[in-house]
Image (cartoon, rainbow, N blue to C red; front, side, top):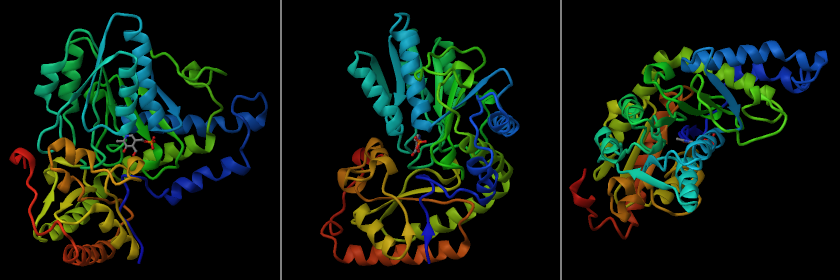
Length: 396
Ligand SMILES: Cc1ncc(COP(=O)(O)O)c(C=O)c1O
């Protein structure tokens, strides 16, 4: 059996999404900006896809939703654009984010630090969440941007975005949220939370890879990073990825259509997995179940190196992760567990299991047996399981 439990890294393209995309590779392949019918043939589908994106995140017609190549691009655009518009021009001087953002945010902020910008990385509590009180403590009248993820990719923990947006706006700062791990898992409505910018990525909600989006609130200026043929209303140049946009629109529609039902089913499968794993001695599950996205589970298995666990599971056809997919090629410890305050021994024992609506009960039962067997085997040969590393400052 092959079981894919790494849906926070990427997801399978829904067959219905594939079906909608297919004609735009070989039949309706004109450049939408061309003045002939090969080009204009794609316009109705593009309009429909954009409508689906607006509806999917609750944007108004007057807002901008700009299609990008991925969430990494959307995130870099916001952070560097706000730097150009507000910090370089001298009216603001700092950015606030959190210690547990995706590398797309952290690396863009580090880049700005290298240019002399002050960046504050809000600490997280024992659940891996940055608290509203800590934003209140660090924000200043010269903060240009607050960038806080909606849901964490490692733990699935949901952040108090709405309250944070209010604080940012009270202080005259703009607010961006990385909603990559929220869309398709929990309701996302830009008007309800009042964010200025929101990033998303199609391949995390059963759409294709290589296409993402940036929501820009009505009237909010943001200097473009890609100059050229003035596509996307002049916001982002580059020939439109027509199949990608059509696919992302359909995937967004399906994500919202399935939200309630699928969340019940995915949540119950995740809980089944979590309840069984919790019975293994010396395991720590990060974050309260009810405060997480319904598909995610991050567990520390004492005495078991995360990579060794992945290897054992892979032998049985099961895909999981030890940390952010983009950063997990080396043997570094899990960054969120480090931020929570876990000692290195424990931060190296992270196992992230992330489900989707395509997982079945049989698959989860198979994975439970495989995980239990792997823990028994790996602990029997572990040199670290005999002693007990402690959570730093008893924060768990
Ligand atoms: C929370 C979060 N933000 C951003 C990204 C980057 O998304 P993309 O692959 O579209 O660049 C990811 C992907 O792992 C993510 O999980």
